Structures are given as structure tokens and as C-alpha cells.
Image (cartoon, rainbow, N blue to C red; front, side):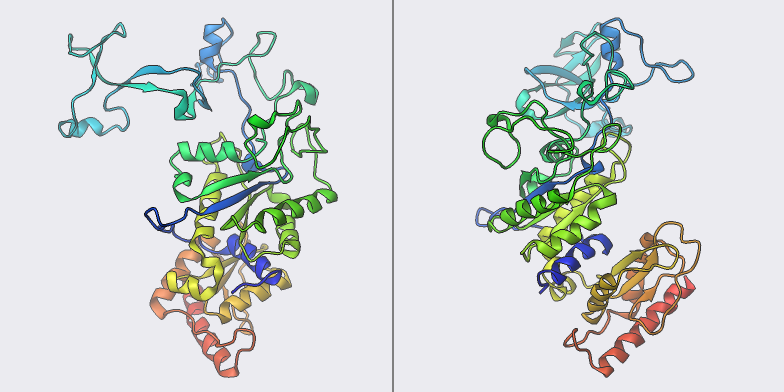
Length: 451
């Protein structure tokens, strides 16, 4: 069992280094209580940031504004943004347009709801050769978010071209791109097929948020855990973002974060927690929380390299993997991990070019090895040098492999040579146990030196 402080530190480290666990099949039926996860919003978090809302060409055309065009003069395609419907609306969806090859097996499909002619008129029967088969569906406000053209304009009628009314505008004349808590993110992930709602229930906490309510918020509109109205908030005091309106968190906010997390996890309601923060500071905060939060529950720290609204935002995938990690209970102990995942191992991504890590990280990884988990050490990014073999340690050196390739090769090595032997007491391994472990590591090392 992982213990507090050293154990909590190991849990955060494990989330950062291990190959992601497979999604777990949760218990079915009314007897199983759905787990609950606490989600804490931290500062300057790209994982909670969005690209600016730009007025769509649909709106520009409707209001007589110049259309957006590419450098070659072609009108650009609108990026759709998740929004809510204010009233039910019936739409007609052309059949066989969800995939290019749907119509290839159209004989497998039920009949359409009707047909739409060239004038956009719907009828139950086909009246002309050019009529399109369609599905008729009523979209309702209660359905949740739908991707739609962004129709908003500035108060002066001009289109939004960026985050602010003009490039040099003060913060008071700009719009925020960071969300105030993670509830909206989870709603969008669910709409994208993430199925987070089927995994657990979630409570959202604004520990040290990146977005804030500058005009305040009534209690009945809150989406986070808290009581009463939210008073007007100020950038740099109540919320902390980066970019054109930069405001970094201060040390007192770390203390506030500990109090918020401690109170929530001591409630007994949660299976674990997610902490969302910017990548430059998330490691420091993770260590801080592991030192001062008195809990045996896992806290999975998450960051992202790309904003929401761009191609391949990595934050959503990180959140899903963290939820699966928490619910898998792999963090509860290495024996449980190996029982569920016999091919489990760890890839430790250190600094370039030689995969160096802190002493505490090396100690945590060494304990994992002595417990039966093989560990490969790789360098981050473009190594520009080989990770040198050290026969005196208990690690597999990853040569010039990236962490992704090292993970695959480690899996193959375990399949070929079997899992590591482990010490009866990982804190006090015997000489014979160390010799057996090093012998097996030597076999793994040969694989990494020749592939």
C-alpha cells in the first residue's frame, strides 16, 4: 500500500511516467455505487483554455460584414463552437453522410423519414429524382451542447477577430478564454464521445482557478462546489491566467489549494481527484500537495500542450486516462497492479540527453523495480545522445528511444522473458534477490541495446 507523503509523491510520479492503464469495466447493476471524483481547477492551465471566439462567416454574411478569407482569397470554413439551443428546432439530416462509405451498403439501412427537394421542402414520399433522403430530428435545449456557428458580434456591430475589442485593449475590454471551473470541459468531452458520465460522478472545485467572474455570479448559477453568491473577482487576486493578460499565482494561493483539496478528500465522498494546471508549474504543485494533503487517495495532476478548440487537444485524453487510472485502483498497490496487468511496467522520462532525475524520483522508481515492475529510463524529446547503461542500478536504460517506443519494446521484452522477480520486502532486499532481479534486467537491457 502506498503511504502518505512518500506514497502520495509516488502516485503523482506514477501518473506522469507509466503507460496508461486500460479502461476498466465497472460493476454493473443497482447494487454498485457509482464512484465520485473531485476535479480541482488550478492556475494558468492550458488544459482549461480555449482558442478565442471568432465571429463566423454565417454571422458576417447575415449582418453584411466582410467574410473571412484565406491568403488566396477563398472564403474560409467556419469553426463550430459548442453552444446551447434556446428553443426546440427540427432539422433534416441527409442520409448516408456520417461516413463516405455508408451508401456502399445502403441495403442494410431502414427507410428514411422522408425527402427534401431542391427548394428545401420536406415530404414523406419522394417526388423527384433529385430529392434527398433525410432523417427528421428535433433538437431540444435539454439535449445539452451542440456545435454551431458562432454568431456574436461586438457591441459596435463589428466582428470579433480575437479575444479583445482591439489588439491593445485593456483587460476590461477583453473576453476570457479560460473556463472558471472544469464542468464545461467535462460536458464537451461527454459530447465528443468521452463517456465520462458513465464512469463516475464529478464535483468541480475552483481551488486556484484560471478564469473568474469579474461581475460575480448568483448562487443558483454556480457549477462548482460552494455556497452563496460568488462576489466580483479580480485577475491576479482570485484567478490566474497567462497570455496578453498574465497573472501568476502567489505563494499564499498554494496554501489555499491545500486547504481546499484537504477538506474535499477528507469528506470520504471521493475515489480520487484530478488537479488541472499549466505545465510549467504543475510538478511543483503536485509535490506540494503530496507533502501537505493527508490522504491515501490518488491525485492525478493534468496539463496540456494545446488549447481546446485546436486540432488534437491533448488535455481531454489526459483527463480520460486519469479517470481510468483512479477507477482502476492500480494506485492502491503494486501487487494489485500486477495482478490486473501482468505486462505492467514503467517508462521514466527524464531530462535530455541522459535521462537524469531527482533523487526522490529515482528512489520511488527503484522501489517499483524491487516490487516487480521493470523500469525503463528514457530522455525527453530529441535526446541528441544515448542514455548510458549503468550496471550498478536497477533500471533499464532506453538507449536513444523515445518514451513511446520504449513502452512498446518493454512490453515485448516482458512477453519474451517474463516479469521481474521481486523482493519479499522491497525496503530490505536480500543479496540473492538483488542478483536475480539484475539478471532479468540484463536480459531486458540486451533487447534495448539491439532494437
